[in-house]
Image: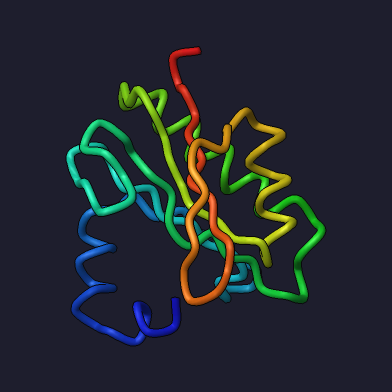
Length: 128
């Protein structure tokens, strides 16, 4: 993720493609999430899927429901914009995020190995 975020070009392209939801406290961003609309396939995500990237909450503010709220905003926005599916990938070292996604109905559809770590692709059927 750091390599991606350190590339100005990749980050600018992600911002241009996405709807970005942020959580602020006293004009400081303490949480964010990107929702990429369908029609932007990658090696992990099909063209028909919208997908979440980079859910993050500042460590001092974790456990206050910010990640849940940001995820819910993405789900509602995807419904409002007539998306059919929403996907994401997460890893074995992101337990809190996996819990958020699974409680909202995202289902594991594929396991992958990357840089010696286990990752999963999750899919959410927005129309269900």
